[in-house]
Image 1 (cartoon, rainbow, N blue to C red):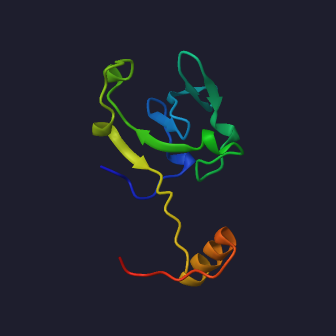
Image 2 (image 1 turned 30 degrees about the horizontal axis):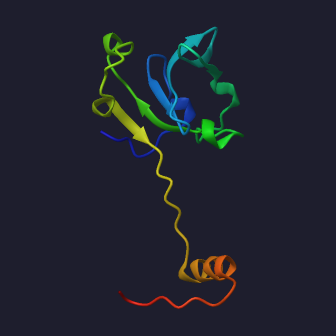
Length: 115
């Protein structure tokens, strides 16, 4: 089940996060701070904004899972069953903005035709 709204303060120890670059990390709490850890990486959530983005977009959190603890270290784990949130990167723009962007891209006016 996908939770519609989720922010950094909703993250808890034991959850698993997936970053935009594909790396998955187990969240653990240590000394009042929350860290994401894997065999090769460790990050602190201190560096994240409340919307779970950070200064390096490839490290933005894009998915959050809440698996049972016995499944966390299972490398064959199918994670979708435990997905509780995923980032919606769809950006809404007006038709006027779309035409402006297309004009900048193509260097001329753009006419959209039916197929």
